[in-house]
Length: 252
Image (cartoon, rainbow, N blue to C red; front, side, top):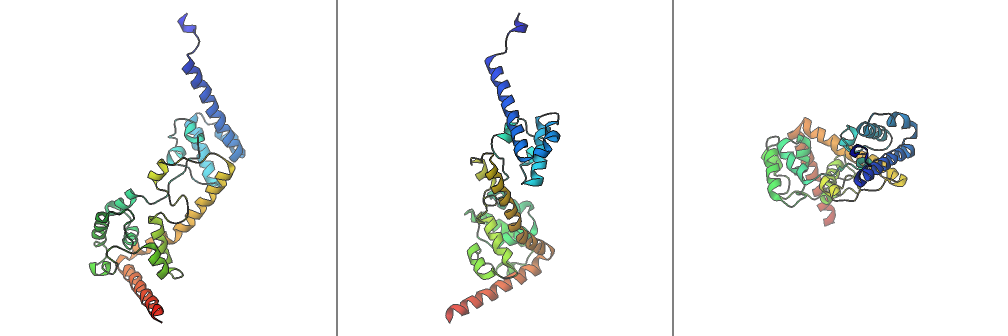
């Protein structure tokens, strides 16, 4: 008789919840990717359905986190509960990683700026790593504490080197873009936005804007990567010229 007893209350609740989560997935597909409904829902399981949704969603809107796109989600609610966003901000760990395995261009550009997290020990370690690429006498052209982003915006905006000031905004989480100004720790402590068409439109625009803001600094990082000492000298010389012009203007 025990073989035929009704399922427990907890089992029934789980079954109902699973059905609701699946219904939520169907709703997302029908609202945001209606032409892909058959392809997505015909996948054999939740992981594959979520990965299929995430792939097509990225093509039209913006990327979802890696674990969703590559079939590592275990439950529909991983996707359907809220909009899962990618934190694009430059966090403390990113700064620390520059010393160990960072891109040379990003490392040298970062040394221009004050340490964004208040730990000067990390800046000293960064400077020591930069010495492997650039002579000490060139590094000493940078103020001991580094520039603030605001200082370099005054000197470099409207010039071919403006992207360096933008890099300062990126590492200080001060770009005005919600995705770029949120690091992983901040994201983990945030309430994610609900699935609503206006939110999807908003973050699609934020993603496109973030890509645009990063283009200039990433291109400049490539220049530092190709010729570290020569380009570092070129940029610091230009900054010195700009400072002299600004000082002369203030004296008049």
